[in-house]
Image (cartoon, rainbow, N blue to C red):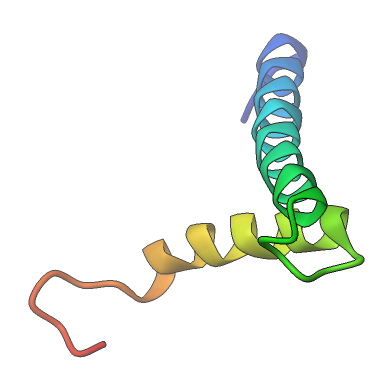
Length: 63
C-alpha cells in the first residue's frame, strides 16, 4: 500500500503523462493531423489502450 508521499508521486506522474499525450493530440488537431473535438478524452483513451496491453499481451501468444 502506498503512503501519502507515494500516492502524491504517482498522481503527479499520471498527470504529467496525461498532459504530454493531451499536448500531442491538441497540437495534432490544430495541424489537422488528428480529427477529434475531444482532445482530453482522446488522450485518456490512448493511455488506457497502452495500459491494457499488459493485461492481454503474452510473448509468443496469439494477438
